Length: 348
Image 1 (cartoon, helix red, strand yellow):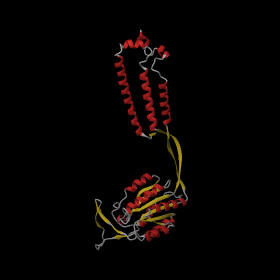
Image 2 (cartoon, helix red, strand yellow; image 1 turned 180 degrees about the vertical axis):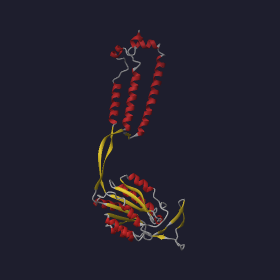
Image 3 (cartoon, one colour; image 1 turned 180 degrees about the horizontal axis):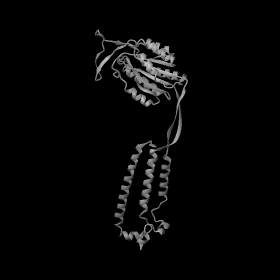
Image 4 (cartoon, helix red, strand yellow; image 1 turned 90 degrees about the horizontal axis):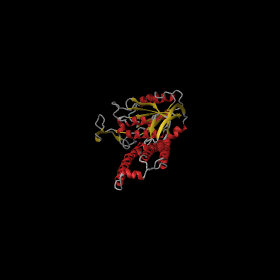
């Protein structure tokens, strides 16, 4: 297994064909210039120790040196080092309201987008806790089982919208009961539900569901989005508001944040309610709560840690440069005696 840190340095290899082209042009120019001063065989007799092979060899050495230097800059890594990583944390399930009331724009850009950004900001602050996601309107639907993959959590989070569930309403009891099934570790000391909602259009069974969750050792923290003054629910087409949702009497519905319901749910599980409109306040609150909770080691896995391997390539590049530095363009006496290229034969 391997990986490359900086692929963009590979473009530096484009220097090599330019270098060889310049070498060919220089050799051609030298031969043409020398032919003006005399016969090539005569010039060879005048400079018998001049090697015709070594200039090409020096160019080959420089080419190898550049190639190795470029590979070193790319920093190849090979996965030969194993590390044991232990994680400690709590299990957190995000229960996100996707009912139509979450389209209200009393908090910019609207309640559902604010909720998604709030959850994403919380995920950015987590280190080793396991997370899961469910969505709910008139019913609750699982989206992401308990995992430590925050990247997948954000991917599922971005896909959430109010059209996911056809029937409407806000069945908080179903959301709480379904969230409780996500906790698969009986030994986990802390189980947490972060419930994000406007608390509007709730069922009467929410308090009973909260009591059941408390009996399972689950603590619920609720975050209310929206304002107490409320706002109408826009009906849009292609991003343009055409009208607002109305009741059976033709009156425009004004949806308001119901903090009382959310506070009651949190209190029943020894949790707390927090205004979800202030992202920074929520982050500070979440970090404070998680810091105070007991952490449990819930997994210990071995991961392949890629180790830098640029050093041999840089050493090789330096070695070829040193060889080129001490390699002169005259014939080497002991090599000439070996007659590797039949030079003595050609001189006869």
